[in-house]
View 1 (tube, one colour):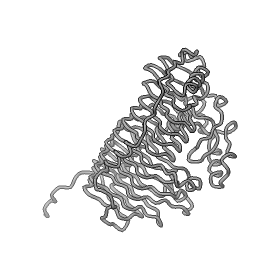
View 2 (view 1 turned 45 degrees about the vertical axis):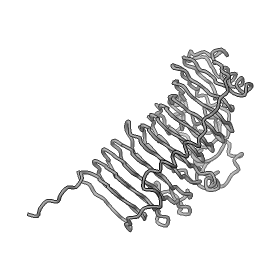
View 3 (view 1 turned 180 degrees about the horizontal axis):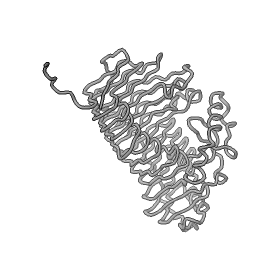
View 4 (view 1 turned 180 degrees about the vertical axis):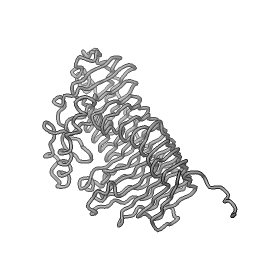
Length: 449
């Protein structure tokens, strides 16, 4: 197999002004700052309010009653016993409530769009009104979803058919973004085809997701929008519909993602912060202070930054994780020249990947899209102790924009056992490399004959 390394830039051995080791002190400070929800002692089982776990009866009225009882008691725990519960419509969270799925419990959602009222949400980085996510909370705090049960979006039924019809509405939402159309006038719903997320919390804080299994979302699985102080741990995924991202933080901060077993048809974790004009106008609310550790990746890409990141992404720490199945790319940092904003202070340490198309990929020219008016700044990114078994395309790609170069990139102890192409670096500067092996490690040169 042929290996090649292509350098097309002014090479500079340099390092950004950060500690050379993974900044554990910064990670510990973020984790310490995150607050877990505090839930009052009141408890109610949905079966006592008429819910039947027979997979047929509509259990939504019982779940609504349970949520209202919790609200009257200033919070509490809604217990879902063993059984399959069909909900024709969303669960709308109030503050101070835990939804707990016991062993053998499954919540499945109906796919009649008329059962999902319009709510304030975001779709691919643009704020608008659309069908409610299956589980939704706006301006709530102290909320949790826990237990060993399953949350099933039933996306393989009606919702999956919407993918073929969504382009017109996708482009309309982007036009409204670029024209600064008032959010109250960005009304989608009947006659439109923007699929809702499975779970979304917006303008919320002190949120816990623990141990549940996520399946079959209509669109993104867990969308954390303009929220903070969030813990996700022990989750399991079996989500294979279009755009089934696992976790999407957007304009959100102070997040711990740990011990997750991903199995998604799209990105495992995709960190975002709004699109284009609207994102740039919200530059005071970047996605930041995010810790990802001890996870197992399987899906399209393991860790993605962007491409909707116009308000900025910073202070992301990923460590001690590995692959558990197919990945197209291990680490994918992407933006284009319409986004603006910045991506900075990212740290990746002790990660192991199997067979991928590309192991590490940074691009400021994603798909070659954009007007060139708002290139993004990508800087201060550290990769250390990264291994990969096989790369079918390129081991490492760093691609800046001609007038906004990627800068201050550190690559330390990167070991890729085989690759079609080694490394390509363009429009980049201040790149530090140390102990990089792509392909078979060189030995003592042979003697001349």
